Image (cartoon, rainbow, N blue to C red):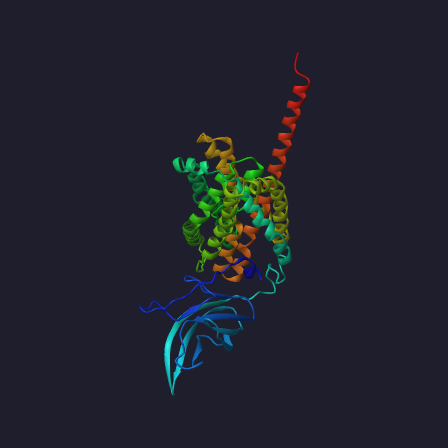
Length: 438
């Protein structure tokens, strides 16, 4: 399911807001989000820290607002270090409803309410037969699991490439980071809005492109910065900074432009996905930094393999993006394809132009351009799928996939052109050395 593939919900708790410490916590949702059900059978896990007065005397009661949309099959209690209740539910139709969870204890013949979690919002969004997202796996998980160690090793190797003096330079003159943030979060969303209006795209597709334009830099940014001889440390810093800023800028831009376009829906920003993206970048890179300080020989080895490994992962990423995005080719029209090409191209041009007129060094100009053009499109996909009815979500989701495919192709062409140009220059210089002018 598309929602299962692109929505990362970290385990969190929902409290009652009471003065005392709560006993119950729901593990399926975040504090600001609801439960999203996409299958006919779903499970909710509730953890309880309450200690029974008598052996196995507590139990969980689930109350449903609409028993036609959602039905409780059973509630299973598991006793270990912490008591857990597993609620098995069956979904019958699409829509929104609420459920209330109550923890009760039997004290003799009397039942006592210990705690309750009221009005947990549930959104049921089942897969439609005519949806462009097939129910089959869009990504072969075996492939992902096979290449996950390579990805982590690559990020660890990038940690060995980090130069700490760059951080001092950026701290004293943060202009590259400021330019990148302005391009990503202000200029690109506005340009995306203008282009969608000029091309008269439907509201849902227009919103999809706008959300994609307001995404932070993607993890491939520092990869291309390395291959195109940009500033790798600056690229890593800009990616992490823009991902952190996205916690504020993405909900703001999404709210403003969704209201301008007249789209109805409650916006849900995947905070856990944004934070997990940061963690996925920082954790292995921190290991690389530690290796560089303590095991310099190992660090030298990692730095030697980083380029071939980056090439392999770049082609794998493009392949996976196309394998997921080919499902949209039958629905993509000329306007959508044109925007898919323009969005990353404009990000590259804006970033390079503003960095150049600010008289920044060439490697820094390349890095700012790359950060503006290589976007984390799948964050936009998560927002779209979480926030809107299925019909609007399906239409809007064409945008991030199209941008991701076009961005990968454009960066690959730029890389090939850059390598070819560099090779030609080297050949000319070699000829001059062999045949110096008389």
